Length: 147
Image (cartoon, rainbow, N blue to C red; front, top):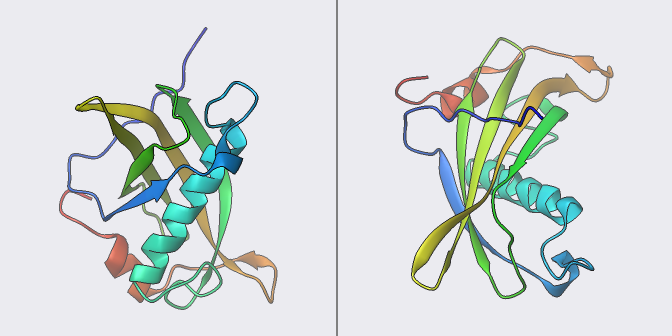
């Protein structure tokens, strides 16, 4: 079976944050559920945008909408873990970009990769209900060395 592979750019992350696992993130398997992991990625994205003074409705002059998502699960995560989410940008076009998330936790003095995620983000005008061009303030925030 072919597996999802997410290739990270050779650069420092745009942003990192720590997100503790809540009991409501844990499923019947006693580990973080796939739905909770997507919510954790959304939280990391919101923290990134907020750190820039943006939101998903106004990211430097345009709204954002998620077009696709890929998740490669690597290890289980449990209640009490604190996840560190490193966010990278990639595949920037005139109307879209990818955000890549490397999610790790430290357990027993060892760093474990929990998941790698890609969200395809599109600039979107919520009033006109259509794709729109990325504005310069967002372009500048997404650009880093090697991108």
